[in-house]
Length: 591
Image (cartoon, rainbow, N blue to C red; front, side, top):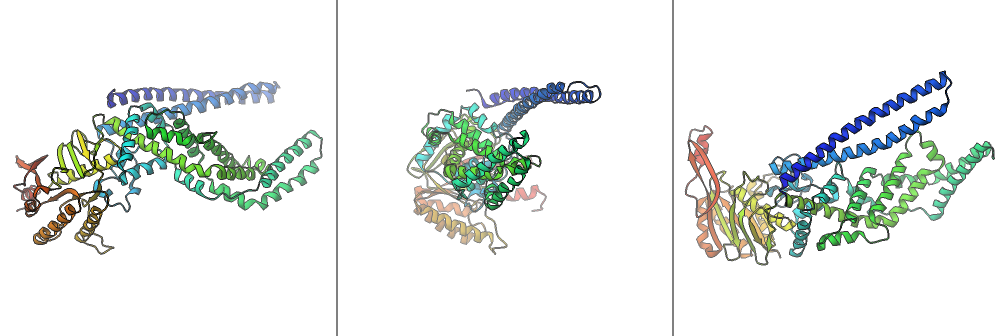
């Protein structure tokens, strides 16, 4: 397989050339349109002042219409090329570690989640921002849901197979992204809410009346124009459709207001569905998603395209020039009835169509991550409580800045590891590296390690505990409430992984020692595994009382030329010195 960087550079060059060609074609066609308009103006002047035949106006008119069609295609190709270039620019930024703050941060998914803030799952420079390539709300919500909740083993394995199949399918993944262009993320949630609602309902005879009025109006207009009927018949007749329109006005307005989904987003959804419908897959999950769309004689992409046309026509009736025609032909009423009929017939299936699109986009996002990290393996899933990683790294750090560490918790190893070390030595980063890799693993993605064996784990973390002035809670009180929840989590059906950072550091050493010993004992007794970091070396003395269930590890630092240097390597045993005084002196404090 070609290296991701080489492939992205090749595609960047190709799309850049396509953009340049498109811009030249756009300029050429624009100038030709101006020239044709000038020619038409000249012929109009000659027609008025020199008496040439008006038939000469036919040539520039036809030519101009042809240029408009060509111009639309040129602009479409140009937009696609720009979107493709942007897609691979973002990919190159991810490979270079320059992606933070340049994508969707998913901050709206942070609320009420027990550990998302602790592990940087959402927000600026988060795991979601790194992974997200979805262009619909359905895709983003599916991806966020997978990061927020671990999946059962069978589900994880099904996603792994799907991600592995999509990993080399760069053209397919490109099309899913480029189809959306550079517009804001499609508001598929609005469409889902509308589809799940109750149709307004137009009786069949009402739809027949609407159509009959339009036919009668056209017939009378043609008859009046050809002299077959008097115009005095046409004008009174127009009061009839107007009266019928007034009777059904509220229901028509209600239907059109509820179905006011942007046409572009419907067109996008139709295009995404159509692309998925014509792809063949091998893995069970992707095949099932594709088959979920083939449930009728007409594929969902065509159904959504039909709705998009109806919405587009309804929107065009607001045009000042077209509105009078739409009024006398009762087009708004007819379109409202057609949209409501579509809603009644196909609305119940929209949720399933959006689920398919959402899952495909989420799987494609994980596959893009997998493609950009070709050496990252899928974890091996086991039954017993275990986290056994070789050369583990933090997924949000670049290869140049991340450091590898072997970590084994559970199984035949210790169930709790107490991590001691100096300030900034890497203790909290280690906890986050473990937690984020567990999230990736249980979402179905590869992990940042040489290898990882793990069981399903429910995560409990205390890396970001904050006080609350409004709630009247100190940081210590907030921490013990969180720890209480983690202990309750450990008693649940899925083994818990606890990541306790600077445990109980808001209280005195005596209370900290007794409290930490009780908390760790309760967690281990409930079958949980995990790590505890601390500055208080007294807590490292808990390990002998735990026996084989406990272990001490530490991070070191050294002083070189007056500066503190860290290597971020985890070592067995207890740290033997602190850098607190050196740090205070380094910033100018006289201590």
